[in-house]
Image 1: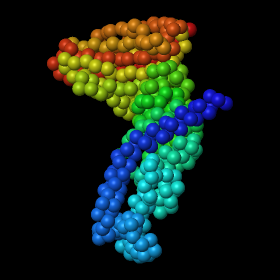
Image 2: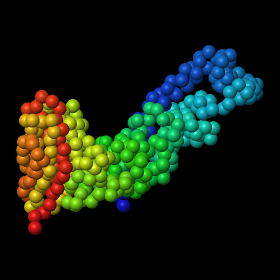
Image 3: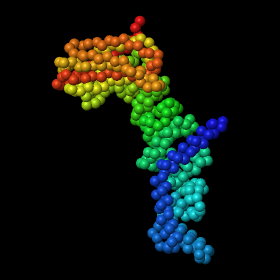
Image 4: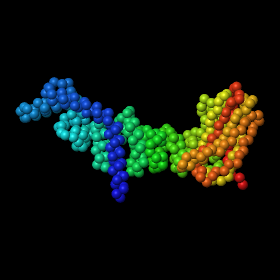
Length: 400
């Protein structure tokens, strides 16, 4: 119980830092503007300024040394005229607050009064979000952050990034689920998919909220899949991918070349195709992988990650080349990824020319190899023209 309370307090302070950091510019601008107007009223004592609410403030300041009753009536008349000239807004409420130590314009009562006038005032919502976080009422704090993000489409990057960081906390993940359909949530997901929170925390949030597939893809789901597979977390990777429409299997049947295993949106669970100035690969009409390899260059053609069990396997590839009299150098490699890092890859190189050829190799996945990264590279070093390479078949089987 004590740990839960401590975690809650830490999360509350994270939210405080979120709203404080994101609102620094807005609040600083508001404070500076109010200071100028108050200084005008207090130093000059004039009620002839063009701002109607500054005139009200000036009359009140004059009244500190004048006849209270007359000044009070004058302030009321000025306030009526101010309402005619300009509707009462949050800035007027903040401006007219008595000044006390501790910047009392941010006092909770003033903030709530300001919110009754307008829920679209950013500084008010920032102050309320901070106040509720300090009271450890995070549900209300998140509600105010939602209002900020709905109004402030621009300049909200710090809030998106910090909310993404907060996904490591179970409490905040739960509180954010009701806002899954908000426009700003896509930016939070994009920040979370790229870096910051633990990938398993992000996956837990995606599965809890069950986002539509188009939202996940727009937020660049493949970045989260790469982070999950890099740590060997294929269970969460496949769960998240299936929410986004992937119907592939984590077994040998989906190692080869098919519409499913070539869907680039789900790489590295599928084959990610190379696209560089040296090698440009595509998958047209289910005809295998087609690659254009530039003369004198070489690069990655395709790569993917798997989590197959330890044991003996046989790798087979059928390849054909065109416009390459001297042939194309093709290499494949399998690198074991362990919690301690990548092991030395197992690889094979072969020159492909003439009629279609088959590459076959026996491979052993060792016991300390929870994740395997498979790569195919092509080099066109001995031809003067662009060469075409077709990978007609890729297969991985367990020998009987």
